[in-house]
Length: 375
Image (cartoon, rainbow, N blue to C red; front, top):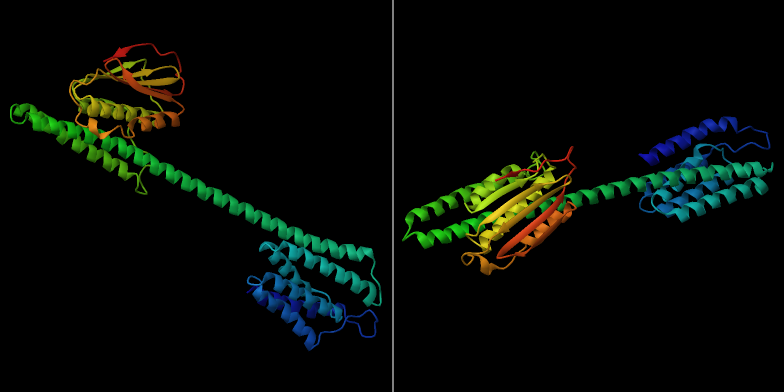
């Protein structure tokens, strides 16, 4: 619609403008519109139809048509609307050099026309005014283009941030699934091996192992549903594992695992609670894999500004059912969780067994925590 609107504005506006510029008998009069004048007023807006496909050609064509219109002596007025739109369009599409050259050419034409081709010569005030108008058009075009580029850059940064957050969420989901499946499947594997070993000579103990398998498989299905539920649009965007579920985890891990708490427990940020829970879970998974039957102690030490998570076992009493499967990514994954929160994690042999210790920063307590032990 832009060429049509520009053409209507130029033709009707010029017809109105020439009433004050055409004075028969006056040597300074402008020429009234004739068929050629109407054609020139129409060709400029018509050329705007190609402004996107051929912005530079459109610009110079309109500049030439406008200069010829002025040279013929027709009335001033809305005829300059087309070159203004063409210059603005060229800047917006990145052809700034052509726009500035065209603006300079228009200014030079008016300087030459009003100095040597008119009966009444114009002075430098007129030339400066024409130049100022051209500079205003170019400046407005540059400002609009700069704001558009800034908006596009903000949108690009926002999209990149959204992709980064989505990637981090996928990584978090993969890590959560690794921990859940690794712990539960390892426990099921060990208990199944125990049941197969005891089913002939000690069927009651085998029954206990099978009951443990049943409960572990139920728990892992429940937790997987919870984890996969966050993929729904109306679900929370963060996994829900926290220290309130630690007693259930320890109970599932067997009678040889005990918990010890020092300091005064208090609510912690969800990320810290989730990391602490997963570190304990992965550590107990490693005990199940490599030291089945070994006594293990889980210690949570609440300090003024840190939470220390300590998991120790007393060493293997039998060959691990999954010991031949290699180390996997358990310890690197735990270390990544701790590091992401600004904490540290160390893991290595300790006496006859193995020890994992994580130190996680937490908000300072309101007052000094009294020391107490809870078994």
